[in-house]
Picture: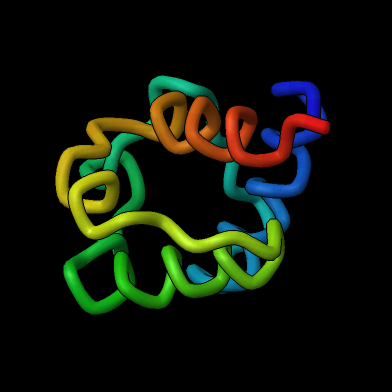
Length: 81
């Protein structure tokens, strides 16, 4: 899956999880950029992303992701045909 398509889908996930219709994410977006992105919402976000992309993150991946771009890289790798 191309990264632009991943970012579009991720934006929809972020809108749903954080209940923000006007959220704008980029590969450089981090938790500090979104007011309600705390540890509990991070778990909800990961779960929603896994469901949307029909994949599972490894615990190490979840704990080391620094920004949305790293999440996109993992998704792109896992969704290759």
